Image 1 (cartoon, rainbow, N blue to C red):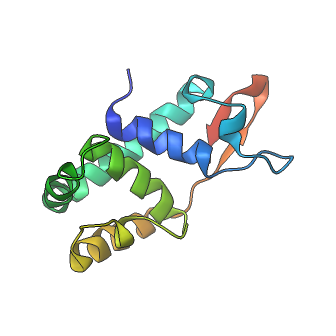
Image 2: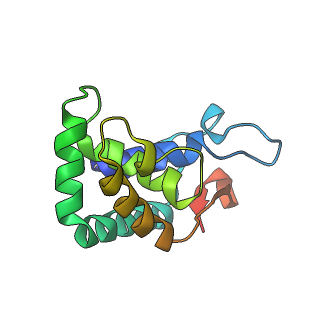
Image 3: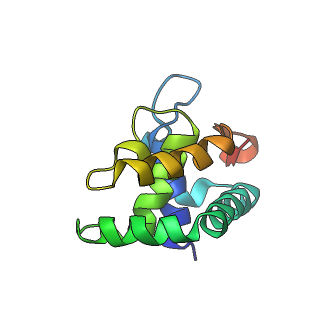
Length: 128
């Protein structure tokens, strides 16, 4: 079973990525379509981000917890995918987050480099 952060990270990857026809991947793919290797990569990236930013993420989670809705780590997974890939949203603009905290988390996420998803063999979704 996927934890909240990894689930949100992968969901955001589908939502923000396009297939070869230019359609959003989440129109035809779901979490169950990810190859086991992609899930392992996402899990490793999320865990590494957690390990390297524990105190900042505790502050982040405390702040977003007051927003209601998804779990705080789900917000972190979503923001990690968006931020590392240079989308127009992410840690740096999360409502309620102190700017310096958002900037620190953004700087670390950007060091992870970009990742992309693609549909490969057997219709499975992969991350590279």
